[in-house]
Image (cartoon, rainbow, N blue to C red; front, side):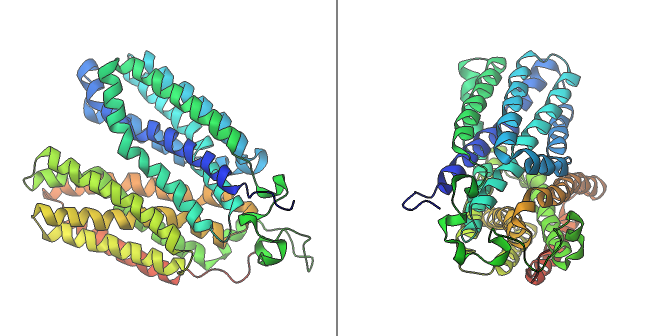
Length: 413
């Protein structure tokens, strides 16, 4: 490593954060603003319009293993630039839609391209450049993904008011192009490409699993199938799915539930905003605390925060207490959203991170999508959410146990 050369990792991370913030928000957080607009103009039901986002999210997550393989083969920078420029084309092409099938097809395209250039390559940048501060770097990425929920809805609303909804998609597509170009210029695949090491460390300070150098003891190369030989894999999946159940339930049903128990739509929306704000706090807190405290304990605590929130929601009808619920559930889900990439980066070989994430991410996406439907069916049958929330609470409690026992493998090979 060149002496006196500034550590470039924070610049590379800032490029990944910019892309995550702008593209993720455009893909997911702007959609809710357009939903009533499309329903009103075309006469489509809200369920029909909402299906587009479900299809897009599925397309974003299900091919994750292929995205991980592409990152390993071509590098994270390549997939970030190509994927998000194509996503920008998809977003801008929403200007032309006049039929529901066109909306579905375009959102599937956006999901695939945003997935190709989004979560896996951006967190791979954080994983490649940081080791000692990996949890902090990962939490900054995941916080950026959630931050879109704070500014995209009002921004999109203002753009539609100033222009029209079609022109707004052109503006959003242009924002994604600019963010991708700037992010692509900043991002570098790994510190070795610039003659550096993770965190700017000296080679001698790196543990064997992360210390670049010749292989010792003639150990065979690590194979992806090795992931299934590690008990921690199944424990991580356990708490990841538990968190997905909590996130999927509250994202889909929280506002409806708060209205059902007698509060106005604006009050219900305010509880969702509280949830989002504390989600950001939870993500950043996990990353910071994990520098000093074992990640297993933090992940377990995050799930217990979620459990506390679910219990509060079941028991209270007081609006002030509901805001406390939103704070607890936000802190927990935010922390766990940052926990998954941090665990994967620490528990598996650094050079295999993208592929490993490609195996884990579909479980999270499918669980989050499926539970929203299951909870809805329970409500349709029983006429209330109580039974569904009790089931979610039990699952979350089991997830906290999984997190506590998910110890790091002693040997990774």
